[in-house]
Amino acid sequence: MLLTASFAHAQVGEYRNDLSVGVNGGYVMSQVGFTPKVNQKWLGGMTGGLSIRYKSEKYFSTICSIVAEVNYSQVGWKEDILDVNDKPVINATTGVAEEYSRTLSYVQVPVFAHLAWGRETRGAQFFINLGPQFGWLLSERTQKNFDFASRNTKDRVSSVVAQDTMAVEHSFDYGIAAGAGLEYSIPAVGHFALEARYYFGLGNLYGASKKDYFAKSNLSNVVVKMTYWFDIVKTKKNKNKK
Image (cartoon, rainbow, N blue to C red; front, side):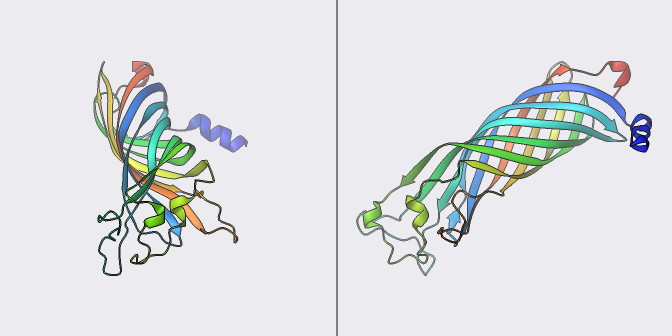
């Protein structure tokens, strides 16, 4: 413990005490990892919310911060309903290709270790984010163009349809998120960041015991978003020259 304290006191990192808040928004594409498998396309939705960042240190060329967000996000899955020839399945009643999707609205809270390299107050920097993400389900909405009683199950290459009529059982979601992007800073204006992010859910939408239908039903998504940051607290200029 004494050695750790001595090292912390003598470290070469440059002190920072910067607090920034921001707003973010973007587009999210999601799927659900079902077992047994459900053929899917990417489901598109919107995401946006509030961000907060605390910058604590610049260690050599690495700018170290903690970032947290509170976002509203639309995720879920969109089924790719095909026959054995990989063609869309036609509903006998409507005469059109069957379509089904489920949109899940969440409050999502990611907490990241934020590492950046480049200019802090003027110019560009590259950054990465990595950390856990938690989500709470607000609502779910189904979109389909057929009645369950008349859906064409005979021509489908997959017989897995249980998810179509099952409400989500677990409202709490958790997983790991990682992202990378670029940030551009303009003095007296703020910071503009563009990021691509991937989230892998470790929880399941449905029960995963031996008596349940699905052994796995975890969310995954890809996000592209913009964030505008403005500074609330900044390190004094004589401690932060770049």
